[in-house]
Image (cartoon, rainbow, N blue to C red):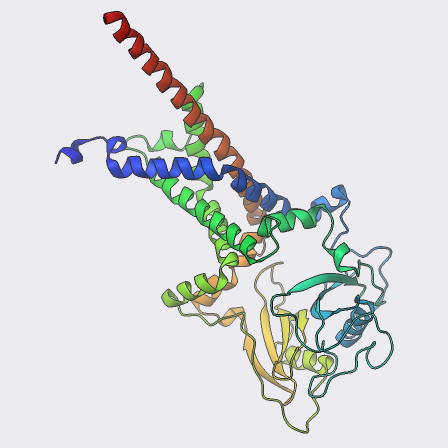
Length: 428
């Protein structure tokens, strides 16, 4: 009963939560500020590339060629011919607008393959037995992932981007991307560290909401900064008012960042509440003995037939005989960055093996599919883009106001203790 009569600020649970909020913020303020600022930069990376000197990823160097886009097989062949030794095309992203380049992600070649060989079949690559023609042979190294990128004019097939993986990983914005994604720690631990920092942001957001919650009759004041406020009051009002107005976006961006760092763990947790398939899982097919697999252009045609009117966005040829073509298609009128449909085509039976269309996703699948667009400020128009941009500027503001509140209160306590000590000394 005695505890119930205490003001909320004097209760044990409140003071514990206050200390957690304070010390998590103080200890992690610098890395959280780095994540916030780099995230904001990446939201507007296209607008910044002309200022930083980085090569635009969605523009061609020189005058783009006029005419229809070349077949996917021709674009992949051009990429394969230009790929540095030890690499091969792994994933093709098609432009959304005329005059933009196609982007080919390079992966480590296996089974003795290499890029840059212009002789032989399909730009220097002779398909292995049992692998569809027009597809990169072998598979990426288990822990390798993308090792470079090429930009190709889809009309003239001219390679306009750097084909050297070292060059592809350079530049200011590329460094910002790596800093945001893994704090420049290239192994898995870097991405996990970023994920845990995102979890810390969630803790700060939720605990901040509880600590901010106003007493009856003070709701209006809790959403504003008092005119003429100074010192601790000014920083507290800024901290609370800006925090509550931006809280929803802050929590969404933080949660999506944690999901992107731990997709398997969070995906399984979300699926246990809202049933969902693993949308990232590949479709396995059964190779047909004695049959010839279809080429990539035929696979694209079958995918288009499955989704009439949809625009071709990406192609991932199978790396092994038991894998299907993975074709990304965007329905007409879809906003940039919104989840697209994926059509899996069996190269042996020349049939569509599976269609994953966002229009038919369950609630759990929709929630999972939107995590990356939400984090990147895409898919919901310019308003969401700029809201995400502003959310990245919040950690520096919270760090400054929070640190100053702690410092000024600490300074005031020390002065008060000194006064008490002086008073006791005088009384003696």
